Image (tube, rainbow, N blue to C red):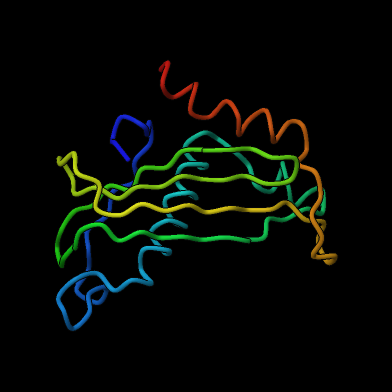
Length: 146
């Protein structure tokens, strides 16, 4: 993945507690970074989870999370997590993510997160509301133009 594939980045500094005995970021922290970056990506657009989903008795379930570790990241590195909507299905949203060291072009890690919309309490998929689909579909195109 290349930096130019993303119009949004969330920055963070690697904390000592996020590293393992090898001195690199412990694998589980990448998923935390991905979740945080997606939240900030959506927040940046004015997206309202409450308005679009919880008020309609809908929620998202994480159904797939993948992480590819390409190069090590260590303590005190400043990383930038790129996020974009890669695909919108009838009831699902797929996010593509990539981690870069600040100011560097090389992708250090990449991943995919898939959420499925569900009716609360049923644990069964439910179609995305049309206004949510429109908003999610327009996120990156608006960012690339602005």
